[in-house]
Image (cartoon, rainbow, N blue to C red; front, side, top):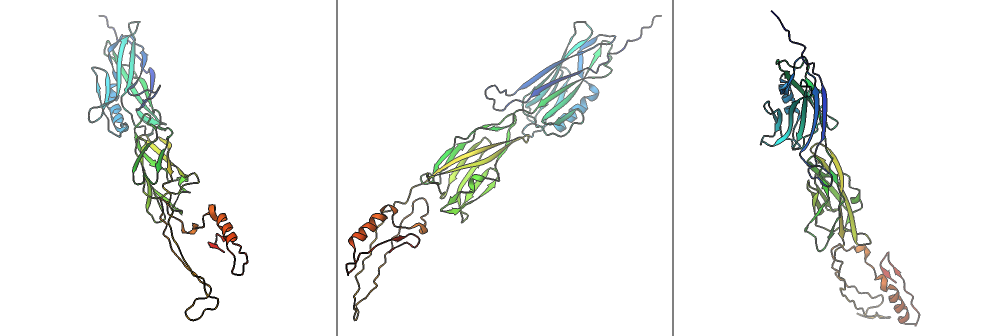
Length: 396
């Protein structure tokens, strides 16, 4: 009788790796969108018996643990749960959302090596949608650290005797977080505080969202460009409630409300007076921060120019008449001094008229004084000199 013992099983423990970078949700130029994929090939050396390429699979002893970790640690960019199942017939480990959308697939295939004994195993990772990179640690078969998700895929294969590798081969799949969100330059929104007051004006800060959807865009708590903004000559204040910024006057009445959406578009409503500089404009740059579903951030600026509204028309008319006094008043006669007063109401334009800034027209003051001094003398033919005190508003 002849007894033939089985030879040594294949040792296994071969290592491989494949790395992909998440796609861009709004690819531009040379940027890549979804899906993204990567492939690696590892050569597994046979033992005494030929390895069977039709018997390549994810290690059955670790498959349940791998799926459990994938489902507990991976979510989509929209925080949706992902369920995984392995199809041994096709060699595909597939992750789906609750509504059946495919998120990520790991595929195994193999061919016999040229020597007729070994096998070459192809491992392909395909990502269809963004994944959250949560940086939740590096323990087990699935980990997320430093914006990288790593999946250790243990691979087994049987030889023609049905024996498994002594140790599973392993492929490390790394999924790098893709591009962070990035703002472009706002070309600016110009508003006339008079003709467009109360209107909703639209603008946009260009935004490349990168590999993950934008979770929120908020106005920054600090807004240096608002520190010098006044309304009707008085200081303003502002409040930020996430994506809404409100500027109020000294009476807590809103004068401007800006709202920004997660795509970078924004609206501006000017509801009150905002003072301008000498060029009749107010330049306002509002800082915003975008945060994607991975927690990555980008800074941008909303640029608003507010043009001065209509000035007060003026040309109001008034008059006052007095009659000279009597040098020696008797009875009901009036002596000196005599006086008279009139009041004219001057209507404001867009901005409040400042009562502390009422004055004789500076452009005509010199002419007025010249005429007064050349045409008026006292009753004793004495010359009269005039001067104007702008502090008191008196022409004396």
